Length: 412
Image 1 (cartoon, helix red, strand yellow):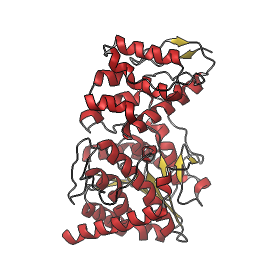
Image 2 (tube, one colour; image 1 turned 90 degrees about the vertical axis):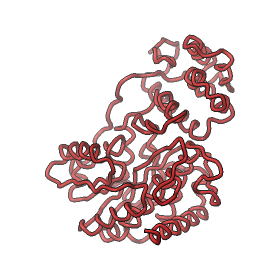
Image 3 (cartoon, helix red, strand yellow; image 1 turned 120 degrees about the vertical axis):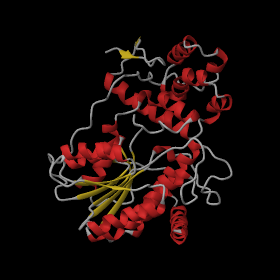
């Protein structure tokens, strides 16, 4: 059948190719992943042209061309995208700056689709897989977290959301209640940027709940400008890493008491290319929102690695995951270039339902009951970057996190 070409204006033009529509959609999602992760990694040398000049016309016209030029498209596709860019009003020399090595053997680029993608299929068990289990979930009031909460409730789990925004939490609680009626789902309110509030929320849950079967650390954010938390930490590090650490430590005994139990932490493929600077974990020397986010996702995987080691023999497993690049609220309020880049990257993003599948799988599937310390993508184990496999760095990060948490406690 005929394939469909990627047009930067989201138009659709026929190309001659043997790719099936399913293959096109798969490559569309992979292209979006690659583009987003490249953005987070700083966009490389070609991206620096746009970042330095803040040339948004060139970026919007050429961003897809750059991704295709890295091996996802044929020369004629790249030329067509650049033509679209010129039609959109970008300067020819700016659009041309996005050219890179093109493989003649590369498949055609994916097409842009409007509207929602198909929702993920229900897990085996017909709504009974999680009967009698209690799931604590952060970052559950939108996107993949909300979908995961709703699906796990549909499988019979009782959901405890940890959230800050009362309006969104109330809406999510209503969705969860309809999916899993009669289970006394509830919300514990806390600002996860604060170590003290995160600890207080964990302590409240640990005291009130007879068991905690699953903890899902899913809260995350990206900040274009450097901001500090109530504890004086860089905000990305505080929300994306220290909240995971403090919530997990606060619920650790409850999870062990409820064993077999699971801890699931949302990381990201954006960790690839990132490296930790233990002399500047708070990004005080030079700040980039993309770089800080990528480092925080590296922290998630290192944290999970050390956590799994410490939990050996306890009956509690710990795994992390990359959900894929998902069309959610992520980055919507980050400001500046970060916020402007997101619509481009999301052209081929997967649905929240699809992105939540690996979270639900790790939280509920019998297939992973005995696996700990893993990093998953599309419900399958995947090898993270070499930096994310560094046991010495994982141990050092844990020690630094303990030190930071202890200092926050002494100042409370």
